[in-house]
Image (cartoon, rainbow, N blue to C red; front, side, top):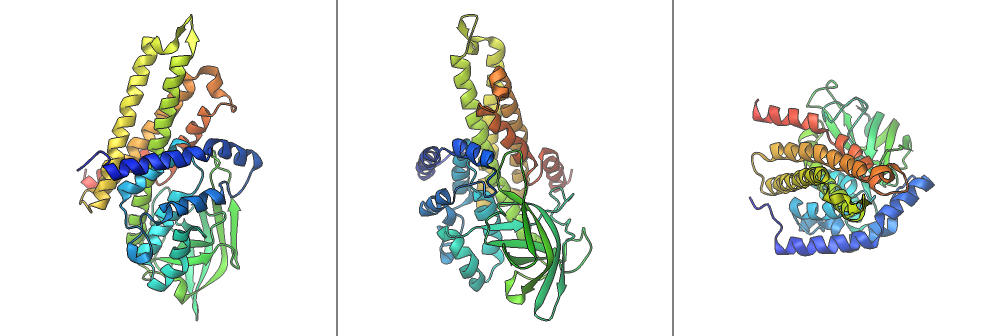
Length: 380
């Protein structure tokens, strides 16, 4: 398995880094946070991402996409993560878009996937609920059969990228109990439809997320995505792909936090010398370097395993997420501490990396969840 980028991916990485840097995402993130903007990202930047072809990357050419692999997508998410870009690329394209591309009919793809690829709309996936803790089977929202379709009731939270999403793909139960693997069905619901209430959530990292309340939402049969009662396999694959894409963002974030900390160690002086010459800080920096590089290998291994349909792909997904959850938190904590007093202030940007690390750690399952999942997959 190749654990380095090929020439095309190196060019993509350079283009992505230049694009992200030109948009000053950290400055935008601070401004959006201070303004309490519920959208929490720039629609203009989203359209320009579509112009670059990013929103088309993971989808088949037959659906209007570029047919690229997850290893290519991770190159982009790493660049987005380096400067904490607030655009919901993982939530809308990699997660919700993947569900629709796998389970949708040609008519449904034309209706909802084509605008996503064109950059004129966004999707969101509502699969989590209070207390589900990354268990995809833990669904209480119900879908009752009606004469012309289904009636949805329940609550989903948190939903990444839900504010401003034109369509929300909702996972609800058409049969079975709360923990049953069977009985889960996907429905496409308009973000501003009757009975649909989207309430923005205030996250520590200031990204777009919301709580969704469904109050007798009527969904016609043509808006059911995939087979009734059998959504779990499609959902599991999409979440795994999104988990690796998010791990790519985490890799970018920890890499940038480490780079900024190294630069600070070389410029900050104490007792007339740079603090980077202190052996204790050198040892700590060396450990962070190792953690970042281990994370890089884990992320790329998971992405290529999924692209190659390797039998141990799910195991490597959990390895990557557990590794990145631990490493990003460690690097961000150390970055704040090695910046000293200034690192604790809101005026300094380094604190944003710690906030993103803590939010990412809990998204799609934390390190403990994925270590337990890895053990279960290995039969340990």
